[in-house]
Length: 636
Ligand SMILES: Nc1nc2c(ncn2[C@@H]2O[C@H](COP(=O)(O)OP(=O)(O)OP(=O)(O)O)[C@@H](O)[C@H]2O)c(=O)[nH]1
Ligand SMILES: [Mg+2]
Image (cartoon, rainbow, N blue to C red; front, side, top):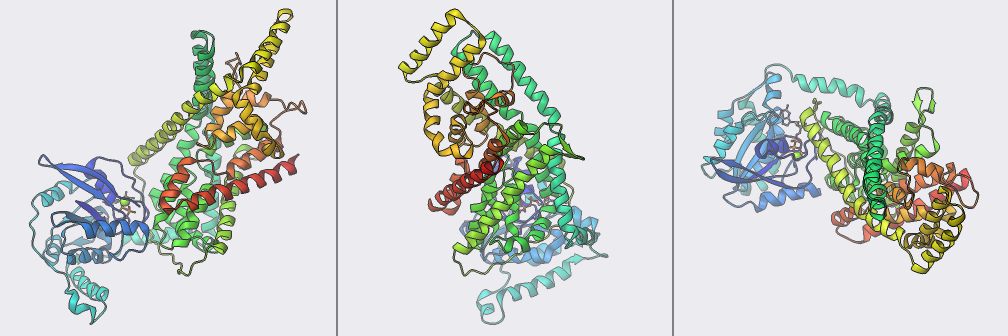
């Protein structure tokens, strides 16, 4: 069984209600961009069901619509196609339906959003509609699952009879086929739809839109909203973050004391626990960011932002629709890049895919937060604004500007004759469904934690090995040297000096030292060099890498990574290693560099060519390197 219909009519909501799964739902056209299958049972029979992207007709021009078109055309004679229509928009929704009927498929029409139709005081004569169309018609409310049983009944008792909506042969050389369809649809709708008074929901939506999409206020409101989101992420999240940080310190200390001293103790406490703690601590911030994005999507505001941004984006070779992938890249570039499928212009879609990873994603939050805290005290404020929050927002803005400029350059370089167009239906405003918002946030945070967790544990172990061992004669020399001194003076200072000399002589140290000359002009030392390498797997690994590098051989389990990094000294100057210049330079590097295997894999899949991910790594790498160089030079 297939779920097909116009965009934003509640197909995925119905899919979830039938299967109990949690397919993503949102209040804008183009939420679903790929097929998703599940199953449900009718009288102990299992029925397979596929949720598909929305489409207005069977002549597809974007990648997501093509998926649906293929499935509809491939559907066998036995497969039932459930066309989900928005009951408050009957006329437009019936076009696709009649096209599918005329392909000779088994069709059931679901009139979804009946609650809204009733709220408008409108009515649909369901039986008459069913008779005129010659197919079963089921009124439904997929938000609360009302009408599901009737739908199941209709599917179980489907009786095939062949119907035709229009005779195509004669139509093609008379009038335009679509016109012919609309003429007939108009007649049917006039007979079946009873309109009592005005469409209250549409009027309310229009009133709100007069403000939210206003030429001046619209932009002001959007900017204010973004600003508030960043302030909130910084000030509200800091309390739970402190709790988590202290929790992990406590855990590390207890475990460190309970386990016998030695290498394993070191690996578990300083590698794994510290690395994981470094990630878990960001869960409050990331949860908030996800929550804000999901609420923007669920209320219908995201479509307005798209509309507002179209004019600006277009001059940079992007499309109004690009803003949805770009904004959702603040959470993660992987689903965002898939979301670009809704952009039908090939060049605009490609450019969107190429620049989306420049938008700061949630994996940068741990890196940014840790680094910002090294140079800006938590309490510092400009009036009512928290400076850390302002700096964080600045990094996001820089990412956005870099994305626009890169897009502009690509617009100039990539040749295309295809016309650009922007058509996005503005949905009515809706209250978010808090339960599904909650489920989605939990799902996303889980992915963040587990994906990052797996990589961090793996890299911690490898890195710990590489930094605890080295060419044996080097290690021996150091041991002998300190053994001699220690006999006379056995202070902690000496121990940590020995540890740091060993780290430098270790395999990790050797790797870092090899990279060092290249990154030295950016103000980075070999330890940062190692973290740049490990961050290639995923950016958030930076934190765990630092945790491991700064604590190998260190017996002290009571200081956080941040404190350890703050105390780090520059061996050449004797001053702080993380000066403003080095830290800002590193921040910019992480803002621009393409350090994410998962994103590269999805770019490869979506563009179907190895060329684009390679270009992406190179151009973002060069951008990162030279921007960092400039920043370092300015601040030092
Ligand atoms: N009031 C009301 N809202 C609904 C109903 N069904 C779905 N919605 C809302 O409509 C919006 C779109 O729902 P989705 O299930 O994502 O729609 P879709 O057809 O899968 O959309 P695309 O994947 O973008 O084509 C969401 O905000 C839903 O909460 C309904 O019966 N009544
Ligand atoms: Mg959907």
